[in-house]
Image (tube, rainbow, N blue to C red; front, side):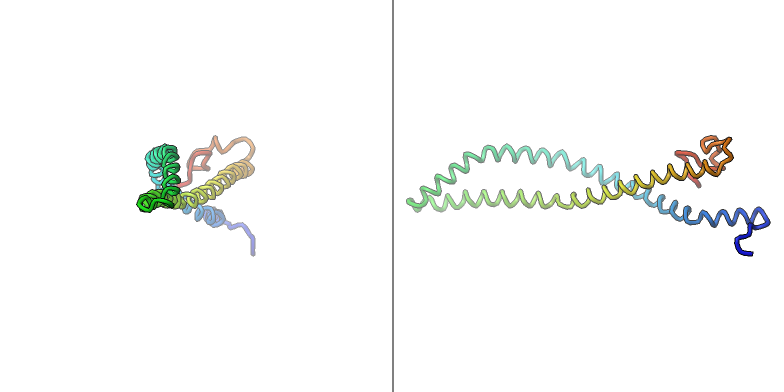
Length: 170
């Protein structure tokens, strides 16, 4: 008869075990995620290690940019002088070229940091997914309580019976 409860306790245990097969499959995936989190920790360390030298480089370039204001004035004056005095044209072009090279190099540095945006978006998605899993965890604990007899709670159960908050099924 379909839907009948198995007569033996082994049959019942098997039926309950099959009921929780999807949860066990998810748990295996969570173990994979936990292992992958070690790689995320490594990425975090690498990003923190990059932050200081890049920040220092930025500060130095910013100071150079402030100093470059007088260089811009010099470039503009050379440009004016180059119109009437041909020997200054080569020097003016070199100063213009130097400013262009610095500008291109800074743009390359900024473009080189572009992948960090994609990683940031991935981490935000991961964070949202983990938050939803944490929410589901709380809801599963509530369901676990609903299957109890009202006299005991999951926290009072032993880890071999039903895991409580912060424990895992092995």
